[in-house]
Length: 219
Image 1 (cartoon, rainbow, N blue to C red):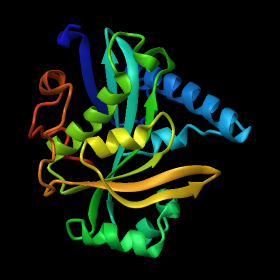
Image 2: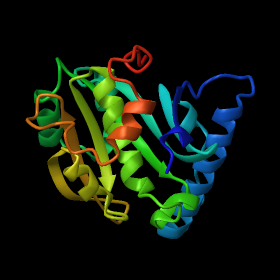
Image 3: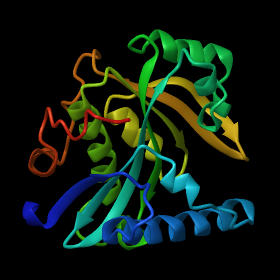
C-alpha cells in the first residue's frame, strides 16, 4: 500500500459550475444513501441539498477513486437557529446542554453524513477503509483547531465502536432514530490521549498536515 496513492481534498459543495471531483463524489454519495434509505426504510427519498448545503465536504481518494466523503459545518449552540436545525432533532435538552458545556462558548464542528463507497467495504482493497475514513474525520478536526467536534453515529457496521476507539465521548447511547439505534457523541481536544490512537498515522500525516489554514476556515 503506497501512501502516495491516497489523497484528501476539502471543497465547498456549493456552486453552479461543473466541478469534476464534487460531481464524482456526489454520484457515490447519492448511490450509497439511496440504497441505504431503500434498505432500512423502503424509501429512496434522498435529496442533493443534503450534500450541497454543508459548509465543506471532505473527499478521500485512493488511486483516483473516491473512498468516501465527510460533511463538515461549524455551528453555534447558543443560537436558536442551531437548536432548531434538523441535525439536532435527536438531541434532547439534557444531551444538548452537555454538548454545550463541552464546547468553546457554544461553537462546535459538526461532522456528518459519513459515506463509504461500496467498492471499499470489507477491506476488499487490502485496507480497512472504514477505519481510515473515521481517522480522516478525526485528523480533520485536529487540524481545524476547533475545540469540539460532534457526531451522531448509527449502529451500522460497528461504526460507533470505531469512534469510541478514536477518543469520542458518548453523551447518549442507543437513541432510536427511524427504528435504528444511534449514539450521540463528541470529541474534545482537551481529552487526555486524544489523537494518539491512529492506525493510519503515516497516511494522515501525508494527506492532512496539522495546522492547515484550509481546514480551520469552515464558514
